Amino acid sequence: MEAYLKKLCFEYQVDEKEVKELLARMEMVYLDKGERIASATMPEQSLYIIVSGILHTYTTYEGEDRTIRFLSEGDAILCYNSSTYSIKTLTKCVAYYISEDEIEELCATSISFANLVRQLMEYQFYFKEEENVNVRKLTVRERYLSLLSEIPDILYRVPLKHITHYLGADVTSLGYLAGSSK
Image (cartoon, rainbow, N blue to C red; front, side):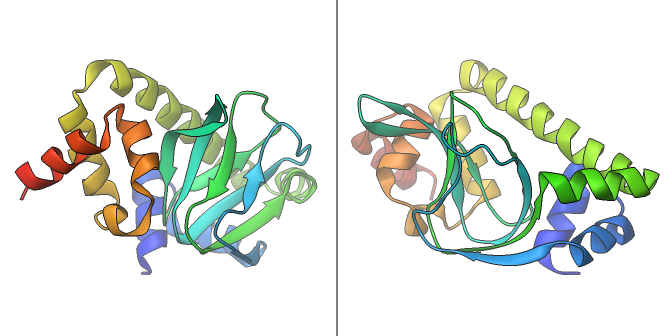
């Protein structure tokens, strides 16, 4: 089983067979670095399943992107019009994509697809809530180690400013964390 599919099935607790059937109905898309897939100005709602690459959910504060969450292979992203956050690629990405209309059509024809999409949505909201709790509960070091366990090579693939904003640390602290975790 491919790594993204294994992670998706494990983290979202969904059946591999159902996911493969959903993927067969989705379109493979190739996203360039810096491409935005969700924001307040994009009215379309859609679902992406990441095959490869890294994205981030962020807000803009004083003209700077402030990372809220990183997304990588195996993550499902339900994009909808939001005035509070945007989603942008930080590396080149490959993903499966399906539009809101296609999701609705699929869910109307199959209860198993409706349940699968519901599960993906529920877990996305669960992960968002868990992230909100972890921001307040975990130390910077714990968040750093958690991030490295999820995306081991992130330090080499993503600009450090996004990582420092996510952790709530400065570059010096990040250097200390990287050095002390070896």
